[in-house]
Image 1 (cartoon, helix red, strand yellow):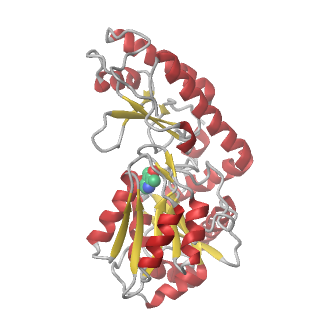
Image 2 (cartoon, rainbow, N blue to C red; image 1 turned 90 degrees about the vertical axis):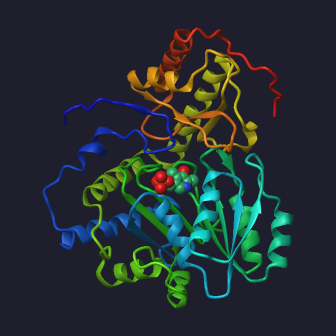
Image 3 (cartoon, rainbow, N blue to C red; image 1 turned 135 degrees about the horizontal axis):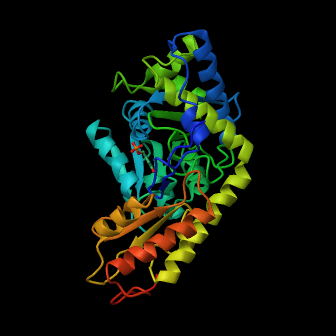
Length: 381
Ligand SMILES: *Cc1c(COP(=O)(O)O)cnc(C)c1O
């Protein structure tokens, strides 16, 4: 294997990958309708269930060709029966996207709108679900990747179930990082994309959910031909294949990535992400940066940082300085607040973060900024 230039991606996905995952894509050409490829996808679907401890008698996984947003689109448009409503818990950019999907499909929906730094109150949620008896689907984002806000999914799922609603949670930026147990966490459907927690390549997404509920959805309105959960599931059941052309090489990379996931182990991997996250916080504190959310509300994978109040600060120039040296940082996504993000995803470790902060310090100095950096009137949250 030739070594490939290693970039440290601190953006919220795609993540830094291992060379073995990159090279896993280089395979002999194969028609994906061949038995050999069907067996690979079957194994991949089974392994994905293990990542979230989903019992195979009750849950299945369905693969799709597309980026992570395809999962959001599919779950929302496919799992809503005639005359029913979706409840979107909205406290960040990704749940706002879910609301946009509801609007695009004209799905009846109720939005529980919260500030970007606020977790939902379960009493309020219970009240909304009592008031709107026709809500049959509760939707939230596990880790709002724009800010790093953690939502209490276990409690939200329990509330959904008390009211007979299906619980769908966007785990795109937690699955295979922060441990998830679909049974204990009251999850009916969750999903992610191969380029995030499992550290594979872009173009493959997957939904893990209850087989019984997918089968029930057969009778729901079909709102999309390409993006329908039941249709793709039924095709997999009948043939073991995706209905249309799969992202072949990305599937091979995902298989290798999962091999590496299980070799590292759920607990050790979460410990590594936590180590990276803490090293990021330590590095930021040393330079005087402030983050947007109180620590106890952070999901442990994304740090959202306020722009300093120094006229020399220029995100674009800091980005370019770091990028030229192999480190990618990313703008924020918090309404109008000026922020940037550092994420603890991917095949990286503490040492990479230490190296990054040396480069960031140089970048700030090259702009003529004083360290520790300066804020005008910061009120600690
Ligand atoms: C990355 C991400 C997605 C999917 O984004 P794509 O750009 O479509 O891959 C969805 N939800 C969350 C929470 C994410 O972090």
